Length: 242
Image 1 (cartoon, rainbow, N blue to C red):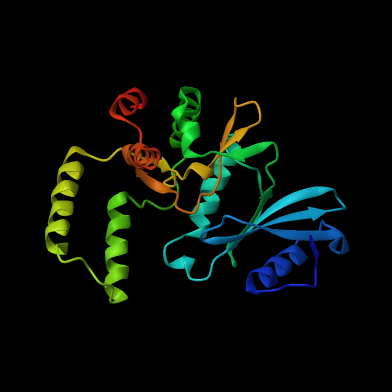
Image 2: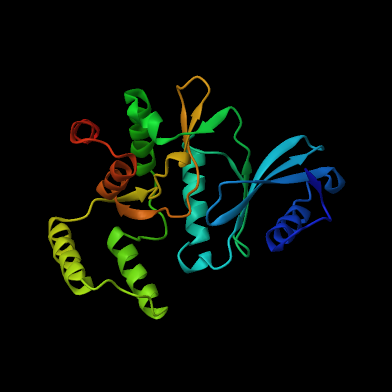
């Protein structure tokens, strides 16, 4: 654990600047340490002596504003927190995108093997059902909006497209037209079913969701589809979950 005044990089400089904005904590009693595993963020565990608190601070990665709306991510974190699905959000700084929440203890991240257990799958379905029943976010970004955004960004960056790109894009347009013709079932969606984003408690009877960077209003069937793909469920399990 490091004291304030010893930043080693840009993320830690922003972390320390954020902690100085939290006047309710005794500044000389703050210590922090990096937490591994973040892909688009730098994550830190912060301990305060007075008042005695353990915080989780998420520092946005540089450039991630191109595909992550931090305001909407905070809306989703607040929805989950209010529904007892996620950690309690304590502070959010809209100017920097830094979010501070309570540090979750007594839980561990799931892995793919966990979801081979029916009870774990059922808890995840309950989480999704509760999340989808929440108030809509300020951003609607469907799977089709996501795909179009990726195409636009790849084009702007002179990305290399595969040789059969025209054919692939035509199949996408056909599939999209068919789905949109039947109508989308728009709900607040999590959109990021990495196994590690599901947290299980020590008695295996409660689950939390973490990391809401990709949350948006989306088709709730998409939520199931990407979760099924991430977990490699067979058709029998998929039918049961649907």
